[in-house]
Amino acid sequence: MIWLIYNDYLKKNVRKTSYAKFLNWYVWIIVAFMMFLTVGLLLSYIYSDNPLIFILIIIIEGLGGFYFGFELRRKSVKHVGATKDIHDHDINVLRKVLKDNDIKNMAQIDLLINQIEDELSNLKVSERFFKPLYTFATLILLPILSLFIKWLLDKGQDGLIIIAQVLLVIITVLGFIYMLKPLISQILDISFRRMKQLQRMLEDLKLKDFLK
Image (cartoon, rainbow, N blue to C red; front, side):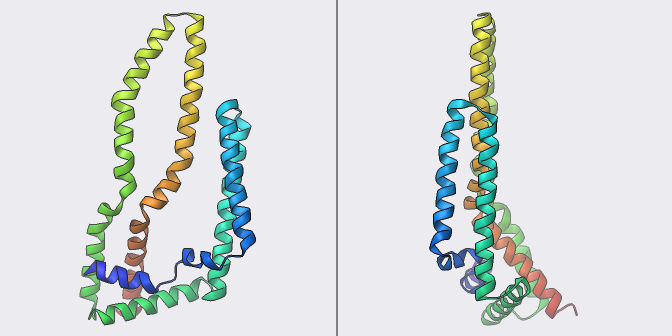
């Protein structure tokens, strides 16, 4: 039942991402420019290991994400209204969805909330995606790296130089993964976030309609 409610609600509620099609052409050009600039700086950072470039990448990514989010919010407010208007709209949508599925009392809503709680752990796809990577790094890469470093230390000064270079490469790769992880989680966990939003809306509806 919860997936029927989820799909019906998802078709009609307000999602800022759905207003991306209303964004002006120059917004896409600015965002695309920032993305290409970030990729270019990232390649430059890999070859130069200049920490200032890494800081600049973080600043540009932050500004790009903030600007894109600001434009999406502006369009959603223009088409639907402010945050309270959006919330009221989604509450009304949920009321209709529940009515169409013959959900009429608080006990039924509590059951839906519990069903969502049972589903949430299965929807956290990013955890299942990253866990094998962490296991591989911990059980295989770290022991191999430890043996490799021990072997290089026996080589004297030349070995120390190679160790420093290897550590720089590792730090660069970890930094790249750290930057990508939030983006990957956003993509993989989209159903988790939407289901969590539905759970919050059901709780708000219960407060408004049944716990007055």
